[in-house]
Length: 316
Image (cartoon, rainbow, N blue to C red; front, side, top):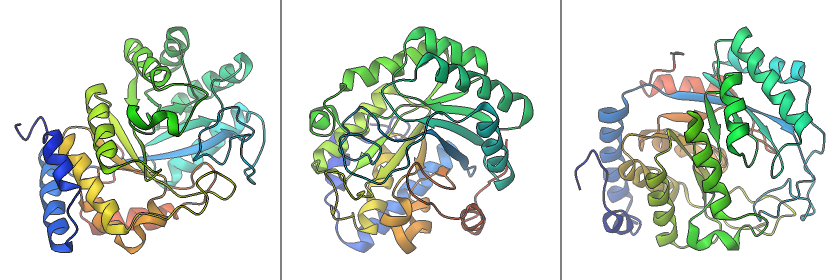
């Protein structure tokens, strides 16, 4: 394959077997060169608000918000338009480029969806932020309504490869997720589609996920690394080593040279002190601030790290 189209499946699979630190550092250098060539030095910074939390009817085994698991996740209904807009303004002041309204559940009831539409419209008018959302499954009508409200991008992860999907969720299907992504594309909304590594899948299934993502051609690929939550079926699951995380970031960059590769959930816990190396491995997108049910890194620390790496964090 040419560099522009990415490495092949077999090449990517071979790279998963790298264990020597020097070999992984060489891979990082290669991925960094590819990022610079196709993505430049700009980093896309996103913040989220958990706008509706807990008691989710779905059974995703990694999620602390599922009602099927005994966790201590916060439970509350849909935040008001004013509350969501206030969170967006805080994110703007912290340096974010885009703001994502995230809600629990298979899909939003009509009244809650209307709140999300009105909040999106106000964020467009009252801030310089790009508007994003992650609110479960969508049909064409809802995707079009979001587009008309001014939504720029929608996050809907595959979570894992098709061959492993029924091991992590049984209450909706992999194809349900693909259908939502296709509805977004028909509406002209950018797509943010990624997954979570280290939920018991094989190395080959991680590469399957990378190539399934490549086929979908998302604008942004968030890479999450399992941070096992107490009370979920994955409680106590061992973390990936920091070098393993770095390796997979680099591999995903080489598979998808032109996409935004964004590191998100589990970044702090899995990368630890190697976060700068993880960024160097091909990252040009970062989720900053807090996550859905866990506390993130202070945004000012992330911005300082990115500046030290010579990356452009200005809002475009």
